[in-house]
Structures are given as C-alpha cells and as structure tokens.
Picture (cartoon, rainbow, N blue to C red):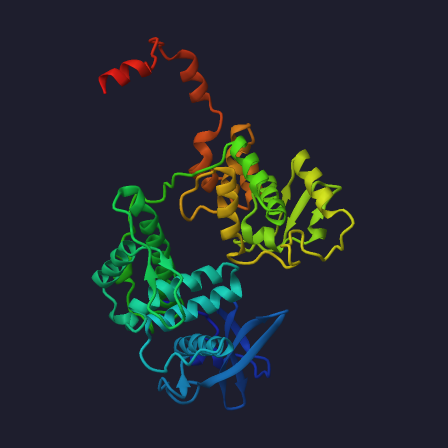
Length: 432
C-alpha cells in the first residue's frame, strides 16, 4: 500500500485555516515527482496535483474541493489523505493516456493490462523493453493475459512456469499459424536452458505485478502473496560457456565471406554484442585513444570499449578514408547488419572452418571467446566486465571466473602429490 503522507500545515482544516490566501498552492511531495497542493481562496480551498513531465517542467491539475467548510464525502470534497489517493490515480490515468492505454477504471485489471503498463514504463525509462515485450507477448499474455490480476493464484503461476519450461524454443511459423516449438531434449543439460528462460520470463511477470501493486497502493491488486510464493527453478543459470580456441577463431575468420569476415574480426576484437556491432558508425572509433564508442547497449548505458594493439590496427584500417556517419560494418549490399542477418552466414562459416557449435550459440560465441581468452591471459575481471558493458563483475565471475589465473590453482599444481598417472590406450583397447 502507498503510504499516506502527513503534513502539519495541510492535515487538518484548522491548520489550513491559519494559512494566507494565495494563488500559488502550498505543495507537499507524496511520491517521486508527484505533489499534492492546496490552493487557498476566500471561502476555502481546492486540492491540486502536480507532477514532473521533464525538461524542468510540471503539469498541474485541480483534483477537488478541500474539506475546509463542508465535510469530506470522498468524491467532490476531500480531506488531505483522500486528496493524496486522488492525485496518485490522476497521475496514473494521465500516464496511461500518454502511452495510449485505456483508463485504469475500464473493466477488470488483467495481466495483459498490467504487462502493457509495465512495458510502457520500461520503454520510457529503460533500454531493454524490446526483449521483455517479445517474451511477454510470446509466453505470458497467451496463457495468463485474460486473467484478472486480483484473482491470480500461486498455483496458477506455478503451473504456467512449469508448462513454459517444458515447451521447446519457438520456431518460425507463418503469420496467423499456430506457433511451432523445437523438440525439448530429454536430459538435464537440455532442459536447463528452457528452465532458465522460464525464470527470466517469471521475472518480467513479477516485476510488472509488483509495480502495479506498489505504485497503485493496492487499488488494482490488493495483495502480492500469489506471485511472492512462486519460486524460480534452482541451479539452471550455470550455463556451460563455449568459447573458441585461438586456432578455431583463426579458421572461422578464414572460412567467412568477406563482409562477414569483417564482422567476425570486429566481434573478436571487442567482445561487443551483435546488435552493438551493427550500430557502430565509422566515427565511433577513436584512433587517438584506441577506443570504440557504444552509444546504445543492452543495458542502456553509454560506454567505451578499450581496444588491444591488434584491435586498434584492425579498426584503423577498416575506417580509413570512409565517411564518419557510414556504418562501420556493412553487408555486401551496403546495408547494416540487422536482426538474424548473421545466422546463416555463421552456419556457413562454421561449416567451412570445421567449427562445431550447439544450436543457439551462433555469433554470441565470439563474445564468450573474447572474454575467455582475455581472462586466461590475465586481464582483471573488472576490466573485462567494463569492456563488455556489465555493471560489475558478477556476470563475468559467474561465466568466466574459473578461467582466471588464481592462487588456488597455482598452489594445487605446485604442491599436489604426483602418482605417475598415465593413460595406456593399448591396455584400454585390449580390455574392450
């Protein structure tokens, strides 16, 4: 529930009676960027709401009459507590109108409406809304979208989570046709990625429900107990990271078509995500500092990638004599690399280079290759994390920490007993 703010000069009609008449309201902040104001007139006052709209500007709207003369009725005459609730509702309605959503009073508050509100907020405040929207449209709304949020049960969410994990990854299908799914492997490692995906989608659902429950003060969803009881799958995030050996990486470069070869080399030199590579312009490379500028990243944060000497030489040659606003990496048709353009090219390059990748690894394996070899060569985890665009070292430690040279590994290899262990292939063959 949103808390009711107390204010000694606005709480009671007696306190407000001691205020001077003023055309400018007396304001009290009740939420971040939202205020309730009291504008005092000759015969009583009125409540107003004020909220921040950006660029040092505020929007102000009158809410109702204050209970200075007439007792509050909860509708047209409000006390200070009721004015706060009315201000929050008005603020929410105006935000919904801004993004094209119906009023919160328009029928039951469903999971679909809740998700749409959350995604609209993400698109305004975050950079990762596209992926969340795709997952929500594919996995949440078809199953739970019509359910009223207030009637959601823990069992319903838990059943949905397990059903999502048992369904294989979606395959491309014609528009209007029922979606098809890849057959799910029948082993722990095969099930792990789908359970990890189900956990990520559960996070989106919980975030949307939590926001509606907390911001709206319990008016739309009276309790968070249903989804709070649902626990994600455990032990499914420890992915087996595949990275290429130096020899495999060289073979992949040589086995790639010319335009794709540039993209592969760029990925190995930077560890950048495929989407970041496709958005690079020529002027994002700074030859003086030896860095590459990432304007838009998955986390929405601006950063600079520090290049190695080899990487600086590669990008200097790639950018030489080209217009500053031209895409750094272009296909043979002159267009940028866009979503899915790399999939078939990567398959062809892997086949030519005799490099085996599991389904779904695709070009992202080059990011893992960059990080893995950098850490094995002694680069500090924090440095690698910053170059990759992570906020801290947690993700890098999770996926690549075991590759870092460590005191423990050096101590074991120096002091562990030696038993003359060897593998006799001939003896094994005879036994077979």
